[in-house]
Length: 79
Image 1 (cartoon, rainbow, N blue to C red):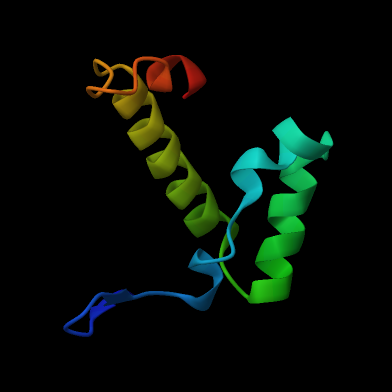
Image 2 (image 1 turned 180 degrees about the vertical axis):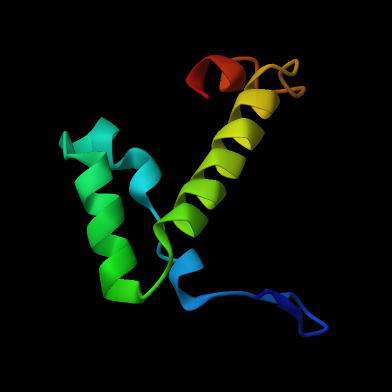
């Protein structure tokens, strides 16, 4: 559950450390195994972790399709 604190949002503890997005890119790990292990360690539901990663992936794909901001012409290629 995410709650508003007045200065930001407070969500599940596992959300801040869910960095499996780059696991395959930087380490060649088995992403599925890391995700399941992370769910067990944090007590999160695997489907919640997958939902967050899916949402982030959609956000990144959508953002990467936009024109580059002024002064950063190579940003979209990097993304």
